[in-house]
Length: 355
Image 1 (tube, one colour):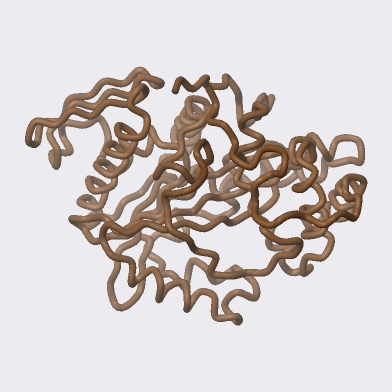
Image 2 (image 1 turned 90 degrees about the vertical axis):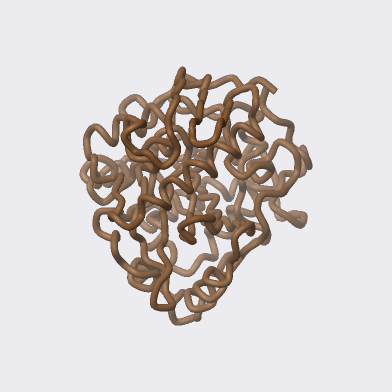
């Protein structure tokens, strides 16, 4: 398998695009025509060949450009990557986990050779070759967590377990949906989820925390989450709200299909072996309404989900101001037919791997 990487931007001129293959493998989050919070957790990795669920860490056509965008964000704001002192071992755990997985699942792109503690890492897409000593931070150009997450798509939160709770004590967060690592670092599970409406009252977080605390080493799970974003911008942080917030007011009936994006997070989590920390990778996928509507099932279903969504959730998901515009656009693609079960499009039940 040889991936072709897009040359694209996620800010400024927004040249981001999805190929036809990328559209069909998009992790569409709705398996029915309505939406409400649930603990929608399933085992990870595992899924049809070529989908984002196949491997532990998905690598797709956006890889090189996403890493370039992360570098820009970190240069502007180094606090997007933080690690409390007791989390360094977890950072090494994460480095090992990602390097092993990428070398195993994408051998044409990544190679890891180990001779005791002396490791040799090759990342061909980014042109990186690094020899270093495992557990000796001075042999890497950055700390272990920062080093490897500069080479891995998605955000990474490292959670420390103590007092029967999980604490966000480290992370690399540059593509978040309106939350801040600098604000949340050191908070526990309930504190950083406090802004989410309704879910606390429904007991969702209590159930989720109980499940997460029971995750054992060697186990890994995933869930999908979603929101909406105007323009294909990865960095929708509170720190940069002045840049992306006003863009919500730029939608019109003529441009909503091209400028409004469904933003899906593939959230996985696994227990790390030495530190016993939980790592919470959050991979962001973006798809415009125009591209969604190339798949009739998705167009019908998204119309019904957004049309009937609780107003408080539309506000929290960030599109209340444009909800009518979006629903009106999608309505023209809803022919009233039934939608089939599952999240995959009807046109290609098993999407091919991009090549």
